Image 1 (cartoon, one colour):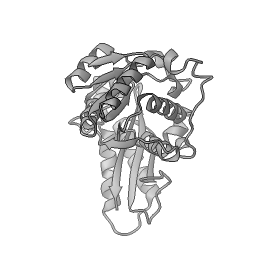
Image 2 (cartoon, helix red, strand yellow; image 1 turned 30 degrees about the vertical axis):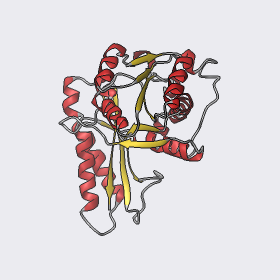
Image 3 (cartoon, one colour; image 1 turned 120 degrees about the horizontal axis):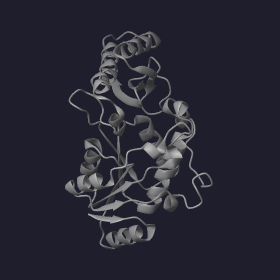
Image 4 (tube, helix red, strand yellow; image 1 turned 135 degrees about the vertical axis):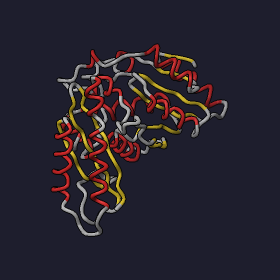
Length: 284
């Protein structure tokens, strides 16, 4: 696996592959990799000849109350993991390379409406930071395909919308959530949990499963608000603190209406130092 930090070396490698007629898949990450990230790389190999992974802790998507300095950085371990899944190129730019003017002065990309909901409401400016850095990375890597995990469902929809609205020639491939045996969605955030909290955390997904079962149990219209309240009570009783639970149209993320057939349950909850997110698509 080749590792490059600067844009010139990245573009030279991409140009070389293009001249050979090779296709490129891309997996952007913030590092601290786990099995879920590696599943993205494995999926990427199925869609292209070469796979590029980036590791960049993006300051633009962190809020004022979020401590970017304490975000886990495990580059040596990440390199070893990426080598095991046959990554062709690792791009590890610094903030000065991505935002040479300083990220506060940088041009940005904003995806309206969908970015302001749910996690966007809890973390103002977060999705503007995500869209901006993904757009810039797409311009640098120029991939044919990019793979994103479905755990960050709202992020996935923001990126899909950006690509469609800006006519970017990139196919976005969602990759299903990788879970622990307990059902807990794999996440870098799980590293903040104590042993006791790790035993509590699966209650978030179990509560979403209960809600999904309730939604599918009857052909009659259900009282969505009442079901959401009951789900929140289950989450709180288990020892987590609900941030939000929302039933949404699977594509637009607008609040689900009784006639919608494809919906998604989006949820976030606090546990200790971690804010956990999860989702569960439901076909009615």
